[in-house]
Image (cartoon, rainbow, N blue to C red):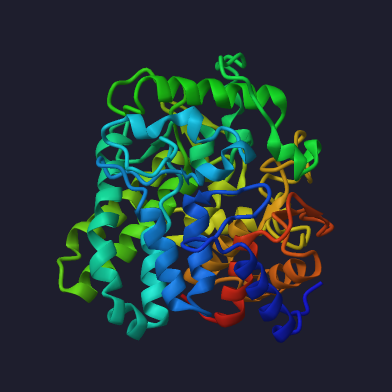
Length: 434
């Protein structure tokens, strides 16, 4: 499957999904399974919205910025309290409005990968007139600087400059094999009664297990109960993730562009982007030929070949780019010709083609890999093949959350917003080398 879908059919269907999931100030990831605003989802969604409604793309990003805490963090979720029973844990679990540093809108205390400055720059770059008319960059720049400052001050736990996540949810890749060893040390007996409304919208075999959810809730309780304080220590799960830090570096490059556009000094952003890119060497595993997570608690690398270790290709000047490209094109990932990029090496004994982040191909990750291939100017034909397949699978299967990489069979929920948005983006950026 390499033929592109009929552009008009894809365009109309993708716009319909985004309109259906529009909540007035932001876009829901999916109206049933995910009834609130998610942080990095909004970044990806804005990349599609910029092509059809630049004002709405700006509003998408400013909506998530409205949930910013006084310490600069952007929360993983901003809650719609009218739907608090439709997702667990909800606003009543976090009780964020009781904390002095939190905003007036209810949020989680956790965060997600920082793709927001990158999205903001792309929104501006696509339609500078709409951006300048609204004063968009000048408004969002200081808030994005504060967000990155939060990461630098409160999340660089090991001294190497890389940010740490303190919960699997913060990576965006909830049950990735990268977290198995660290989660094995975490109790699966939280005090909170776990509800699973997610199982009303997706098959249990496609979602994290009850034991995994027990550990997720235990960690969330621990973080909540010490006031979401990143400087107090005591977190039971502290890991450095390649994708999280690659997106931070890419967003620093975007902040440098934004700074130039509004007459500010870009040098600090350029310097931090380079420092983060250089620091990724701490996560490189030569035996696997890609980047892996590092468990800050034990100091050891988690040697699991996942999609997270390939995403640093989005960065120019990456030291190990040639080796990672070789791994990407090898038998574990694209060598056997899957429709999209699997989230885990397809040769792994515990690879599962339909189980969330343990094997399926995700549309945002394939989009990032396409971007990375174009950054490095290599394997252009493969980038074009992946882009065509992403658009075709999105349209044919009703914009699924993720797919079986080998067969293209859809999994998870349907009418998923970033699937629609990124398919739209690829329609408008076909052949673009970045």
